[in-house]
Image (cartoon, rainbow, N blue to C red; front, side, top):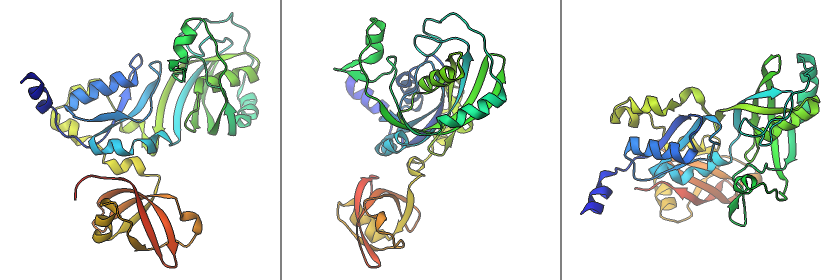
Length: 312
């Protein structure tokens, strides 16, 4: 009876909640708190933020969890605060700091240097990351004083802009690809400046078309009523906003959701559209799911489902 009562206490909640994660909370802790506040049955996040970091953490509930990977792959924007003139063994405030050195950095020097970091490149993940080696997170090995070889990963730095420079505190706004460690970028910038640097603050400000201004803190959510919290949920299709949108008939939508491969009139002519993922809506603008174009034949195309919303 106790287990049955616990099961029925949860409700089906669908949508995306934008949380402003506080420092010191893991993404899993923030998810657990939000899930409790919404009394939700099913929930997941769209990629972790370090406990050290704050800011935008989109949380998915119910049907929206099917599409969380599209935010995992999205560009991410951060405001990073760097302390110049010292380095840290962890790249942030939790590590052992080096002795301070003189800092000779101005706006002109930054204007010449920072563009060199923009573009496709490789980056070696830090030992303080959550990546695993033989099932053990690297940060746990680092706590034991161990360091293992890490494979460099392909990343892209899309933009770096100076928000402020005050003595030895440099604040940058950066936009990066998935898999990028901003603490490593900060260390690389400090090395190039000749004085060293480490992160004293990291705040995610945007991802996949979502912005920190839309997010609510856990304390703000706690102060709301249950209905007010539900009203903050964004629809599942907000997770696939970067995909090209297709509108198909109700009959084609029904076939697609039943696992069939309907033929539709094709509005695009480029063969490159084959195997590309699209967000699919019916003629009533109702989100159906994500599908790929499996075949283009003249003015018609065949769709194949990737992930579909439940229901008729």
